[in-house]
Length: 325
Image: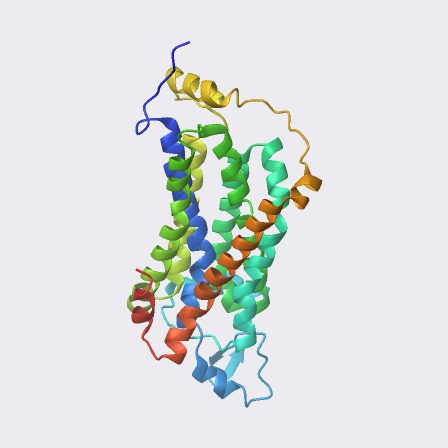
């Protein structure tokens, strides 16, 4: 049988890789937007001033008007949303260091809970729709971040936790679809395109935050990333399919090429996972340890460098963000 070939750059698998890359870019910016914006949200001068007032509850943000104050509750949620849209101030939260640490870390607790269940579900159901659902939830959480911050810090913690839960669907769904779309001889090339979105997303969010904070407001960071993520969801659902067999626009040549190289990929039968053998395998633990060490360093830098450069080194917000180019 003659070897089947199919174009690469004008193929649906290349379109899948580009859209997946863009999805990971947006996943990354929705994950890191608070880490990048936190330095222009927290007012340490107000924090120090309010720390001596025993009647101030650090768990709430208070708006002072005419010598009094207005406590935020459910009845003022719509008003707070309108204020968040038109208010362009920076450094208007008096969160202490412990609160900031909780806000920056709570996302990862949610992320940790959903990755393994998402891997199991993605093999049995539509990984494409699972990822789209997770991105839609993440987009909504991102859009609600400014008003949540102004309502109550506990509400913001809940929003960030839900964002982490939805973010945990990303990589299990991507890798599941990768096994159905990437042929062995193209797997490295396509995977490089897809996972380049991690670096591109980090570069984008940290390098643009300074401009948005200085020229406008931190709220635009959340609104822009949330809106673009919603738009991606619609494009993703319209342009992709779980398998080549189910794709509307794939050519017969490309479908035959993929089936020839990796076999029929529309089968729903899932074999049991050899957990015992995996847990006893040395190479598995080597990968786990290496990935944990790499992630520890990476996320420590992402979480702490923006605050450290602006608060400890005295850099302006734009100067601190410029280092990510």
